[in-house]
Amino acid sequence: MKSNKGILIVVSGFAGTGKGTLMKLLVERNENLKLSVSMTTRSPRPGEEEGVSYFFVTREEFEKNIQENGFVEHAEYVGNYYGTPRSYVEKQLAEGNDVVLEIEIQGAMKIKRDYPDALLVYVLPPSVEELHHRLLARGTEEPEVIERRLKRAAEESEGIESYDYVVVNDDLETCYEELLGVIRSAHFAAFRNEEFIRKIRKELSDYTFD
Amino acid sequence: MKSNKGILIVVSGFAGTGKGTLMKLLVERNENLKLSVSMTTRSPRPGEEEGVSYFFVTREEFEKNIQENGFVEHAEYVGNYYGTPRSYVEKQLAEGNDVVLEIEIQGAMKIKRDYPDALLVYVLPPSVEELHHRLLARGTEEPEVIERRLKRAAEESEGIESYDYVVVNDDLETCYEELLGVIRSAHFAAFRNEEFIRKIRKELSDYTFD
Image (cartoon, rainbow over all chains, first blue to last red; front, side, top):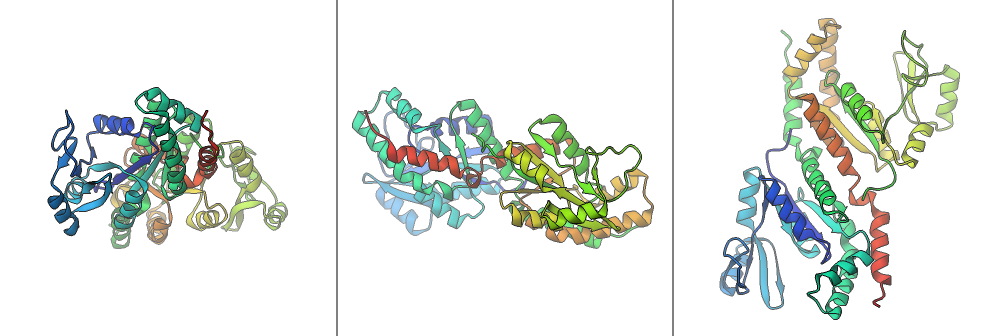
C-alpha cells in the first residue's frame, strides 16, 4: 500500500553538501517524483529556460501572487524574490506525485506549519573538514566566500533537529539510496494512511459471516 | 550514516496477516536484525527448543523477573506468563543490532513509553475479506474460532493509529521490502541521530581556517 496523495518533500543542507546533485538524481530516476520550479523576479542567466530553471516574472506579478497566497513559501534574497508556486505543488500532490523542494530552514519551517504531512530531510556532510575540502575543490569561490559559507552553516545548523530525517552525503550513490528509502517509507507512516486504516476498521465492524 | 545503536522494533497485526512469516524473513535475511526470544511459564510443545522457541521457566522464576524489572513487556494469557527479557534486548541494541518483537498492542504501548525511540509497525491485510479467506485456507481452525479472531481484530483495530507505520501484506515479498525499508529508514530519523548532529555543529563552531 501507499497513500494515494503525494508527499511534499523539503530538502535542505549547507552549501557544498551536494543536495542539488541528489535532487537531480531523484527526479531523473523516479518519474513520480517532481522537482518544483521556483518563481523569481531576477533576470534569466544565459542558458536558463522559462518554466524549467525558473518562472521569470516581474516584481508586480510576484507581489500579486504573494497577496493571493500563491506561494507555499517565498523569500527575498539580494533584492530579488524567490518563491514556490502553490498551484504547481498542489496539482502534483493531487495527482499522486511527490514534490521535492530545495529550500532553506525558514521556508522549511513555514511549510511544516502549512503542510503538517510534509517530509523534511537535511543533507549533512560526513565532517566539516570534508565540507571545507569540497568547497575548495569547486575552485569557483574565494577563500573569504568559503569562510562565510562555513560560518553561515554554523548558524543554519541550529535548526537541524526540526527536520524529520538526516542523511549524510559521504558516497553519493549510498546517500541517494538512503534518501530515496526515506521518501518511499514516508508513504507508510500511519498518519499518512488514516483513510485506509478507517476502511479496514469499517470492514471489520460491518463484517458478516456467511 | 546510521546511528550506532540498534532500534527496538515492534510488529503487531491481526491473526492471519502473515506477520510471523515476515519476521522470519527479516531475521533470516538481515544479520543485524535479531528476533527476541520470549520467556514463558507454559510447557514446551514437541519440537520446541529452549532458547530458540522460548526460554522455559517456572512461575516463581518468572515472577522474580517481573519484580526485578526484567521484562520490557509481559502478559498473562490463558494462565501462562509470556514476556520479553530486557537483558537480551538491551544487549542486542547496545551491540548495534535491531531487535524485532511480535507483540500485541498493550505490550507495544508499554514499550513506546519505556523506549520512546522504538519503532512500531502494524501489518494490515489488503481487505477483511482477504483476511477471512486466509484464516479459512489455513484449515486448522473451526469457523467459530475464525469468527472470534475477526471480532478480536475489530477491537484491536482501534489502536492502529498509535503505531508509527502500517504496511499491507498483499504480496509477501513486496510487504517484506516495504517493512525492511521502513526499518532501514528509521535509522536516519533526526531524533535518532542527535549525537551526530551535535558533532557536526561543534565542528562548525570550532572550525579554524588555515
